[in-house]
Amino acid sequence: MKLKFSAKSGLNIKENSSFGIVIWARSSPKKAFEVIITECNNCFGSKPLFVVDDICPQIMMGYTDSYQEKLRDQYRNFFKEHRINYVFLSNHVNLSKEISSKKILDFYKPISVNQYKNMLPLSKRRGDFKLIEVIHTYLEIRAIDLAKERVDYLIFGKFSLNIAFFYNKFCSPLDYVILDKI
Image 1 (cartoon, one colour):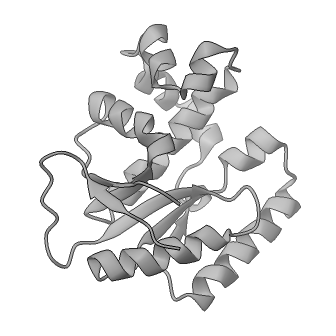
Image 2 (tube, rainbow, N blue to C red; image 1 turned 180 degrees about the vertical axis):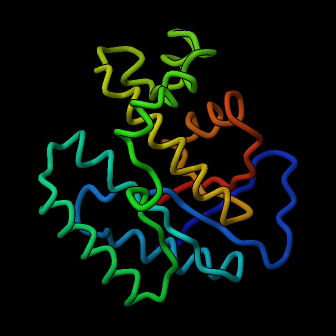
């Protein structure tokens, strides 16, 4: 399986650049991750850093601590086997602390409901979405922050470009490449 990457308009990718991708630890590591690793190495000469959101899946899916830890172990083994660098969001974000310190409220203060809703995938914009999406978005932003501290460019699939646009508008400029197909 071949992947096609394309840079956002006007982006010149420098030689020896580093790349990262944000993923969910919702289920066992996917075969598609192997393809991303191979193609990133082929296209850019480096393996991507994986930033693994292991907080949101636990919240959204209702996983127990022990089940989420088993998933983390599967990811650790997968990354070790493929010699890939990775970070778990849970090692860097304490959601309870960020809620109690009002960090989340400060983040969302300048964002209107319409601006937020327009960032959501079309299916959620057209239908009913749960307010837990606000936490999901916040954690995705925090994962992007974590990746951005460590790499030059982030990799986004077409299905998640809205979060890249949202990040550019409400956080800071973001250099990224688009994974056209998987």
